[in-house]
Amino acid sequence: MIDDIFAKRPKRHVQDLNIVPILDMFTTIIFFLLLSTGFLEYTKLTVPPSKVSTITDPVVPPPLAPKIILAKTKREELRLFMFWSGENPGEVSETFKPLDERERREAILRISDKFARDFSAKYPKEKSLQVGLGSKLPYQDLISVMDGVRDVMSDLVLISHHEADARAAGTEPDPELPTRASTNKKSTEQGTNG
Amino acid sequence: MELQLTAMIDIFSMIVIFLILGSVFGASEMVVPEGMEIPRSISKEGAESAPRVTITREFVQISFLSGVYPIQTFQTDPVTVTSEITRLENEIRGYVQRLPAEAKTSGVLLNVIADRETPYENIFNVVKIFRKSGFETLLFVAAGEERNK
Image 1 (spheres, each protein chain N blue to C red):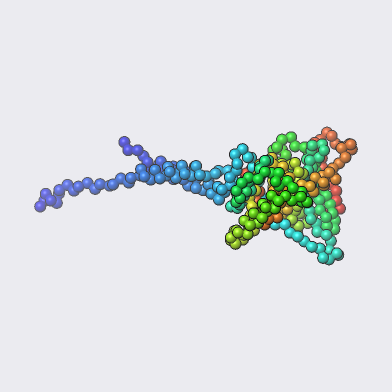
Image 2: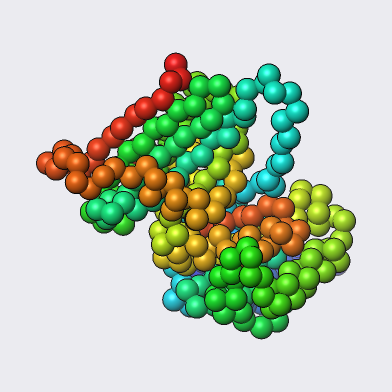
């Protein structure tokens, strides 16, 4: 009897968790994720549907219909200009010659941002802007212009390269006229808005 | 001596969580052809799942239509519209009409994927056909970039 009481109890055996399959599963998931995922972050710029507006009342001033156009000049410079109609039509433009692709992107972004902000300060209700480029200008330039104006102009509409080329040819300064040759960046502003 | 597995499992778990959170599953169908460099943008908007058109210097590929179209197909002036363009417009229009109503709730979207050096004239000529055929909103796909202050 006493022997029974003090008999050595069998040791409690804690069973080890089998983690090998867990490790296998984790490894498989990691490989699957590594092979299937893309780390490049894509972004997008949205061009909303175009609108058709009809003017019925002749007393009402024409719509502003602001446009921003980037074109190449005969001097192989880039010219960005923004113009609008309405009661007080106006135009701003800036010519520049970037040295490399990065500088080009940043210059387009900076100037278009400035033009859009100045315009928006004058006409805060106008949120639609038409964007056009010269026919041979790269797609990257379009994205840079859109990046620049998107903060203040939410509705962007693409316009034909024919219109951009024609406008650039029509407003391009005469190459025979003296210009500030010492600098590769020049700015002009005209318009009657205040 | 027994191998200490707890730390290893911790690391594995963290890697799995990092990969799950860092993955872009929605844009995984955004196939950029080899050798194509998409433009860079500071836009913070995420990509959306939509039919896509890929534009290179030589050809145009449409995700919902089979075949590859030479870029010259789209270089038509408004007066001389070729029969090929008319046929393509009808095919696109048919696709848009067949889209389920829920796919049109935020407008009919189109992802535009193009090389950053593609001339604007090519981009415009191609997207013009899609706009005419019923696509309402164009999403220009670009690679994200931080804005320099």
